[in-house]
Structure formats: C-alpha cells, structure tokens
Amino acid sequence: MKVKVCGITKAAQLASLVAGGADYAGFIFYERSPRFAGNKLDARTVREVGNGIRKVGVFVNAPQQQVLQIIRDYGLDAAQLHGDESPEYCAAVKTATVVIKAFRIGGEMSSLDALAAYEGVCDYFLFDTAGKDYGGNGQLFDWTLLEQYPYKTPFFLSGGIGPAQVQILLDLKLPGLFAVDVNSKFETAPGVKDMQQVQTFIDNIKQSPVK
Ligand SMILES: O=C(O)c1ccccc1NCC(=O)[C@H](O)[C@H](O)COP(=O)(O)O
Image (cartoon, rainbow, N blue to C red; front, side, top):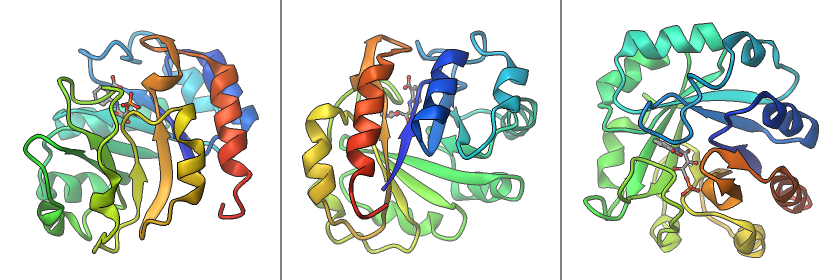
C-alpha cells in the first residue's frame, strides 16, 4: 500500500519523507488551513526534491489557473481537489496534471452515488471525513461504506488515520484501495509533524507484502 503524508510545511520534513520511503507528500495551498504551505515553503526547494516521492498540491475551490500556476511553480506531480469542484473542473485540470478528487464522507455525503459523474475525469479519488473544516479534521469515518466500492478509479483512504490504525490497515481488503493518507494524527501542533512517528508508520505499513 502506498503512503501519502499530507500537510508538509517544512523543507526538513520533506527531506525526511524522501529518505524514509513515503510515496506521496501533500502541500496545502488553502490559505485558511493552519498547514498552509504557500508562505512557509520555498517553491524552488520543493521543485528540486525528486527521486521517488510524488508531490501533491491540495486545493479548495481555487481558480483553475491558480492551481495550474502553483503546480508549475512548485514542480508538483498532482492536484488534490478537496473542495466542491465539479466533474468539468476535474476534467480541465486533468489535461495538465494528475487529479486526486477528495470526497468528504458523512454529513451531506452518505453514499458513493455522486462519484459516478467523476469516473474517467480523475486519476484517483480520496475519501476523507466530513467535519468542521475542509480537511485535517482528525476523524475517522465508517470504512464499511467502501466494502462494496463499485468504481474503477483507485482511491486514497484518509481521515483521522493514526498509529492506532496500522494493524487494521494491514488487514484491510477494500476493492480499489491504493494508498493511505495521514495528517493531523502525526502532529505535535497544526502543521508540525512528529517525523519519528511518521517514519514508524511508514515502516509498519511497508512491512505488508501488498506494496
Ligand atoms: O489538512 C488541512 O488543513 C486541509 C485543509 C483544507 C483542505 C484539505 C486539508 N487536508 C487534506 C488532506 O489530505 C488530509 O490529509 C485529510 O484531510 C485527512 O486529515 P486528518 O483527518 O487530519 O488525517
């Protein structure tokens, strides 16, 4: 299983993710987030990090041109669209980069029916938990909703995942599950990751024979 670590705000964290074997690093480009990367990380520093890790920009209802400009400036590999972006919006962004469309489960979304319109216009889906903020709420949702996942688009499982979920993740058999995404459960303060805990999590997930 692939691992994405989201909410990276420091060059040292990014370097340690690369060294530690994370597959994806997420950078929040939503100004209201305490993990906003735009004023904390230098574009060139992010651009020059390569070798294995995929860099993902996280956006919330941002103008398309702004998304594409940031993707270019920071040398990102994918756009994670975490707001209420339409299938047409996703299709337009997909002409320029890899699209991960996030859906917030719970609240107004209790079934996966709405995803049918997004099949074919996104490379991946990401399932997060609905909460007071667009993301980073630190809450799990009921994963049984995904047991009969009916779509072809592979997905990232997210929302409140922490060290306590390692064993259940290793045992999990959900159709379409591609990666696990972690964030606030590995923080000592919003935007500040405990990199030792992150590393232990990566090592534990990667011990699984299903890579
Ligand atoms: O993390 C944020 O502050 C955030 C703000 C606005 C949109 C998205 C955001 N995070 C996106 C992510 O991919 C998080 O990893 C995801 O929401 C799960 O976070 P958590 O529940 O803290 O594990």
